[in-house]
Image (cartoon, rainbow, N blue to C red; front, side, top):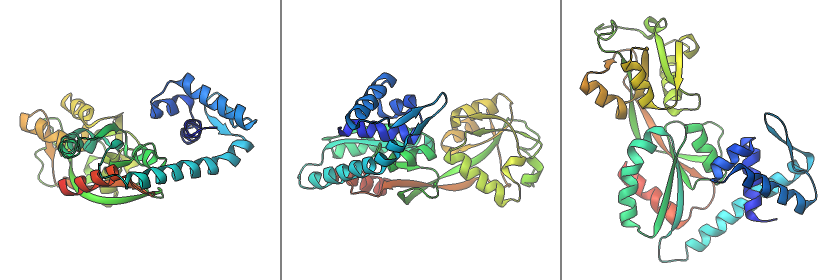
Length: 295
């Protein structure tokens, strides 16, 4: 039994999939299978039932899981304690970020961080907000940035800044020039929205509910995985969209989309630093402090 096998085991359990665990860990599915088989051979028991659609824990797997999590968390704490003894801030960090901070804010900020701490290497991975939290919880990312809080998560949230969400429509749309609108006036309009788990979608749905409309009442014609894709769909006349100003402002300036105001949008949604409930390494603490100063 080794740390790599335990980390693979926990990843498969959390994601209920060998292929997804491999994607998260950056290894192939056959490599995940080999790690699990080696672990099962070592403990002398089958740990996972491999179903057609999902993976389930066996009784032995349920017994091992809390110990595996404890070992991995203790190892992370030990690394943090040893890192604190060094005068040089170094090592490698994995940062998980939701789409807006991951694509528009962090690349610039990480550039200045790496100039200040040249001995640190950073891997930035972009997910939706729900997955950001999962990766930080399970130690697959050292810290994260998210556009929404996921309630019940075993992480610490710290608001660092905000991002404006805009309601956009095709240019020349009948609603673009109407001075007074309620969100109830939009329920018959086609909407293009972000996927479930997206921080943009969570924040938008909160605004919609506050206007007295349930998100389920909207006529959603398409779900897309990025703000850029939604802007493109709106430009193509497919419907209305709610996206970050980081993306929409350029299209509005070019006249390829128009902004609808007065129905709760634009709205400033918070951006959160997502920190694990374990001891941070010196490199993680340095990056967290750098982000606090930059946003």
